[in-house]
Length: 192
Ligand code: ADP
Image (cartoon, rainbow, N blue to C red; front, side):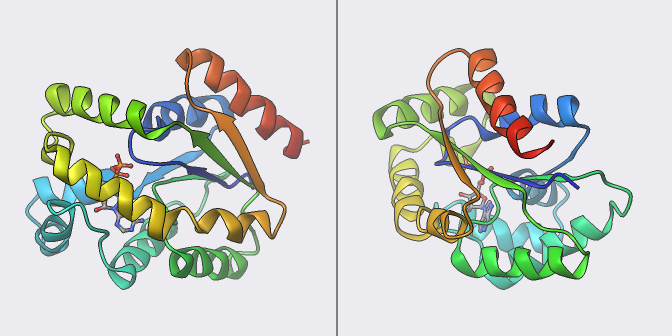
């Protein structure tokens, strides 16, 4: 299997690149943010709970997120591989993902990190907020909070994959296709 973690701060371009990568490599895309938003739209119990955290720019608690992700993985037993987008966001989630994949007889192949500086992120998120209607992208204070949460809780997840020699950083500024080709080059170097 080819299992990728697409990593990076809010607004780095994970969703955009995931959509292209799943086509090129025939992978199943699991975006925890997308799954939460679908639940919010469907007014499920999970959605109501997730919304109370997302609206404040906080992370949804690990236990809830990990259980949800595990269920989603189980829905695709025939998958050739997965792109995890927006997961893991904490060290506990990274450890849980490892044991989930180990139980399936597989592992993470690579963490690809999109590197974009803070000022650019804020611009992109506010722009996305206008087009998408996402409430968490419209309020500069919520955006600031998400960037802080990223720095404090999510950024250290990088070390987890670095220690396993699975981390690759890619410049996330430039043309979408150019960034995509850089990502593909990194993937092809581990997927021989
Ligand atoms: P972005 O990367 O732009 O912040 P996402 O769509 O990935 O957007 O996530 C939106 C929100 O959903 C996050 O701010 C967070 O509240 C919640 N969320 C998504 N993934 C996770 C996760 N793995 N753990 C906890 N909360 C999450």
